[in-house]
Length: 203
Length: 203
DNA sequence: CGTTAGATTGAACGCGCGGTCAATAATGGA
DNA sequence: TCCATTATTGACCGCGCGTTCAATCTAACG
Image 1 (tube, rainbow over the protein chains, first blue to last red):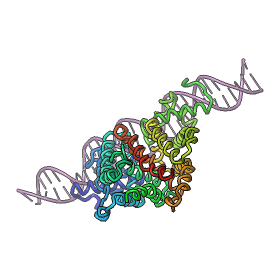
Image 2: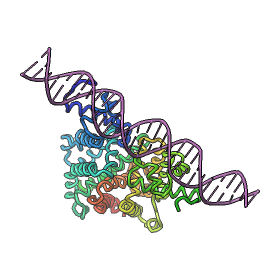
Image 3: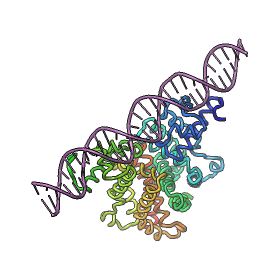
Image 4: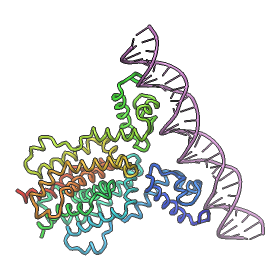
């Protein structure tokens, strides 16, 4: 109900979700307080009342995005896969699928990522986010490394995790700009073929 | 010399290069005609005289960026490498090196890439650019495919090229936001280790 | 029911932007 | 040398933005 009282956290969430819709549609730089207020069905003054300044609203939005986006869901079905490389591939597939589903979220994520090249506060958060993302892949990367130590001589778990994250982000870079023509399945098949050799060597 | 006459193309180039500096520093969305004019040592009116509108200046800047950025330099030294996979790895290394050198160019590239999510004209160009980039990797991808047909059953050259481009862009995504901590060399070592198996199988 | 603190509104301010344009300067051909 | 063309300037307009703020409304409490 616009104009009616609401618990502070509830109202903040309402505004942030409106901001997310606006950011997805217009982009972060073109996001205006007026448009956010309109999208939330509230007045511009109220947005300022709750978030003080535009940049604080953006930081709050970033925090909300990072909180509500499950960084890397390693559910029990994936956890149960015995072979480390099968687990890695299952995760890869899962993350690829997410790209096609959470289109708007990915947009906003990259928008913040770019903002992070200029804004130190945003940059700190994006660094932490990417680190967290790599860390989530780390256990599997370590398993792969110990499975074939001589082949991966000089390779760190962090380095291997970076490559996997690179797979995903690099796929996103291509699919975001050209969602209809970019073939995620084909990408995955090719990536699988590259990784599959590992599996054969191991078994 | 500010205020003096100059050949049209020369002046346009001067303005565009100023625009590139501004875009690298401020970002595309915050690029203003005034700041570009100041960076070029010219008046705001002159920028409008040569480019009519702001969005046309941005398109001209994008075209200039794509023209002056060597998409994929396959020089004779790389061409001379007999083994397709060695060639691919050499190219990969070369492109990674470029990431650390052309920092500002990469920034602006990704800025346009993001703009392409909202602007159809920019999007068309970015699609073409990524396609061209993949095509440059295609010959080597095809060579890899024919070398091991049974392993890469169902994998297209386009798909494999996408993965290689994904390697690069995904690496860029991580290194742009965290240039000091992200270890490009380690990324390359890990990527090499993944690809190296192919080489061994083939020889 | 009256009071009070907090939530909410929308008009208003100042600023910086993109874009326009009349005035001026420089150029090159007649 | 003079003129027509073109390059160049900077003041100016209108707009939309972030932000402020006095006024109003709402809910909870004694």
